[in-house]
Image (cartoon, rainbow, N blue to C red; front, top):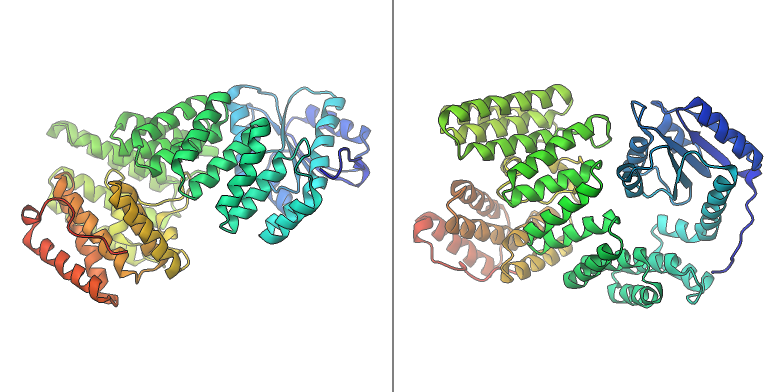
Length: 539
């Protein structure tokens, strides 16, 4: 590093103290005054706390936590992270009177600069603040370049201002590697991390190395790094999250379930992780586990920034899946419970107009399980009517598949409350569309059909005129319908849907031939389709 010790002038620092306990608030203010801090704003947790954090320019934010409060400090920290309020240029100190593993891990998930247990001495507080602010001052030019996405400038600062042989170079290496990865220089990024990692085997370096390996599709490298990281640091929950991503990407759904189960057992308070567990458990037909995860998401979400209708819909789908093996009497009871669950969701989220569409689609699928064709038509018509009244109507077919999460895992922003239709608004990028389509072909050739469908779906999101991706989706839905009787009608309907979309797209000669061949197979019916691949996918 350029400097080892940086003297902190606290008289120039602006500090926000968020603490609901009056006694603790007074104590911390007294400590800060004794350190020379003159500009202090001390507030309780209230509705304006995020306005204060976002609009004022503080150097330090001290956030207190107590389980006795209606809204705890941990929940405020989680929402600050969700809103993007936790800026790298501001020093965040989380102060907790509950040092339980659950609370500490939930806080660490949100990446504050430090966590301190109450009560603490003024010397301990000053030591923590000295370290945090010293680091902020040292890294401020580099962090500002990263925030502005000036990757070349960030690399220049790394090489100019920091000595690679310095004792604590790990953080610089992480930032430098991220800048290189942003420039698609993955090989160079890994070289930087690998060299630093073998000096001290720093866990943040290892996690960044695994993440960049994952981005560059070096899944074996990422998996091995993460397994070793978890063995050495069994409470590093972010490593479990990334390992689950690796397993899901490579089609090892059962392994992803196991990893997320272990992570949620250690750190059960995070809604995104519970939602992720529910999704992968559903894919692995572990409905009891999935249902439990969604129920926890609903409870935890009551006072969380991740509060949304999604866990209600997912739980309703679990109940629908469980109906399939029950008798008629039990089906009637479960049907009623699903309708009540959907009504509860609508009462809690009255402004979510897309929820009306999704609820009607779910009711139609429940009616389908009950072989009630009249109810299927009724609820499907309702969904279409609700959808037509939306300012930006949803893709009904895709929305229906998403509601029925057991069929085809659709691409989503994991753990977030962003609705599926937001994904359809992605920036059109034909070059990226073709790249993702080629990756989908590789997944298909490797026998990873779920991953192939994900890639082809994303390719269509990037460019809705990508006829190759549309035809590849058509073929995969046809093949999966042929090979699996479960949900065959829905899969064939999706195949027909994507094939119909190619009518509005200009196709080259190869694509025209493929479209005609697939149309012929579709017309002759599943029973007359040849086994195996229906033909080479279009790249």
